[in-house]
Image (cartoon, rainbow, N blue to C red; front, side, top):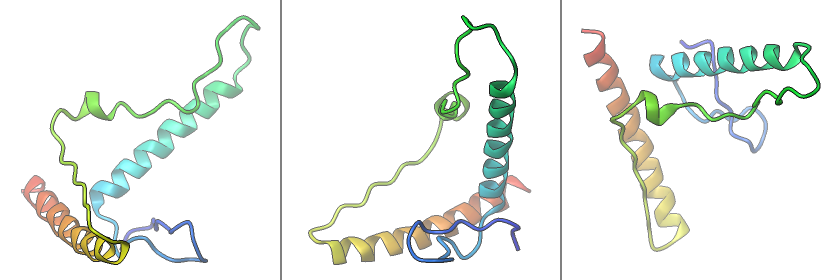
Length: 105
């Protein structure tokens, strides 16, 4: 299994995912390294007129990835939306596994 777990911001220890894909783990590790590098830069002494280091700079996702999928779900009520979101999560997990199996071949 993965050494990482993503927890929901409610409750205690409620997992957002059953299993993290290799892709998610790699992206998460890359973002941790980027954050560590930014924090190290912020801690370095610099002249008083030097601009502050951007600690909250967004990832350059759209520059790195020209092609991506984005899904939006809409429903007539919250309970119906919950059903659609649950279905969508399962489909996306399977799709991610398919993409990963194709990329390792």
